Amino acid sequence: MSPIPNPFKPGAGHMPPYLAGRDRETREFDRVLSQSVILENVILTGLRGLGKTVLLESFKPMAIARGWLWVGTDLSEAASLTEERMAMRLIADLAVVTSAIPYAEEEIIQMGFGGSSSKVQRTLTFDTLISVYSQSPGLVADKLKKLFLTVWAYVQPHGKKGIIFAYDEAQNLSDSANTNEFPMSLLLDVFQSIQRQSIPFMLVLTGLPTLLPKLVEARTYAERMFHTVFLNKLDEQSSKDAITKPIEDNSCPINFAPESVESIYRISAGYPYFIQYICREVFDIWLQALESKEPAPPIPIDGIQRKLDADFFSGRWARATDRQRELLKLVVMLPNCEEEFTVQEIAQISKEISAKPFSNSHINQMLSTLAGSGLVYKDRRGKYCFAVPLLGQFIKRQTD
Ligand SMILES: Nc1ncnc2c1ncn2[C@@H]1O[C@H](COP(=O)(O)OP(=O)(O)OP(=O)(O)O)[C@@H](O)[C@H]1O
Ligand SMILES: [Mg+2]
Image (tube, rainbow, N blue to C red; front, top):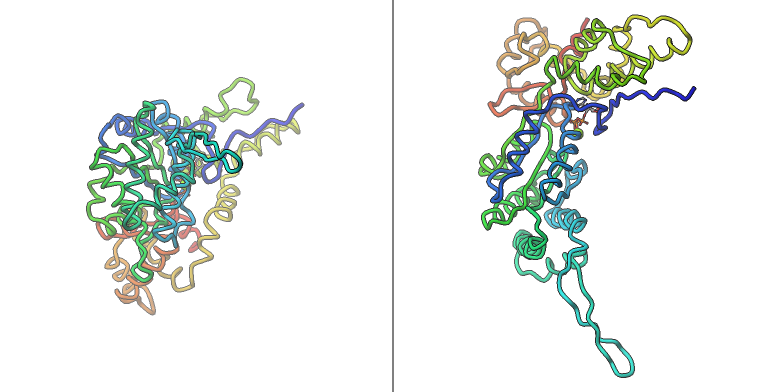
């Protein structure tokens, strides 16, 4: 008997066997694709593991089918990008789709006796793009704008609707006054300027919820430049689809009874990564039972929870200092900790129960360090939230 593959895919950026829900988000993206003058760029945002990367991946064929070219990469390593390197990044990405498009004919003079000449067709390869860029006058932004205008003049006759620049993990982009490098502002300035000149190059950025505030901090007009799609956890029906559809196929020997589906839904709370993780575990356990001809055991909820804690949460928790953990344990005593919480509320509860209460300024400073390490973030109203789904419950388990 050939081994039965486990269809579930818990893992960053791994396309799930069935992409559940997300109809609203897909419709919104479809609407944005119909623009001929770009008035809206897109931000796809949400907590860790909500499915930003895989949704972005699923948008790509949609956009291509509607006549767009699609370029882009993952900006995980973008923290210390300079403006010049940001420009190189954009040019390298662009060249992937333009390199076969004819540009100008170049006369090559043969050396040697007679010195005959012949014409060679140049295309918009990386080298061509770089030479257009370098020969343009001005600062990095001016050169990029000139390059984009030139590229579009050659791409448009091929009947393309425009070019989408899709960047994942874009919250890593940073301007830095210290080094005098402003790659995030550069990106916004260039796209805003060419879009005003009706060049249909569109930005689609995905990232953690810190992304939009960061963009707005760089350029206040970013607020108006982007349509933000906020990914939430899946609703009950979509969660259940994500659990059952991958094993609906008749040839799959495992199936989840309604009670099992219910408990997987409950433990995962509808968070896509957790759904994939738990289903993968359950599938393996049941497959082993099936292979040894035993009845399927009940779902070992505690065991799976412990494994998930070790695999997903522990690493993040281990990076927090003792004092930071004390602070977070206070946070989870707040009734609204899974939504949002304020410095004031933490200070209050700290005064009530801590032997050594935290001062407001200390809390402020610690939350901002915790935001830097990706455990919390500040939302647009200046309140704090956990940046990792179900982190509050995990911390409560540590306290118990
Ligand atoms: N709509 C969905 N239905 C079922 N599973 C999904 C769905 N969206 C995402 N997943 C699964 O959830 C996990 C996380 O997805 P993904 O890596 O895209 O999240 P992310 O938001 O990009 O996370 P991060 O912030 O860590 O980059 C993957 O295992 C993926 O297969
Ligand atoms: Mg991702």
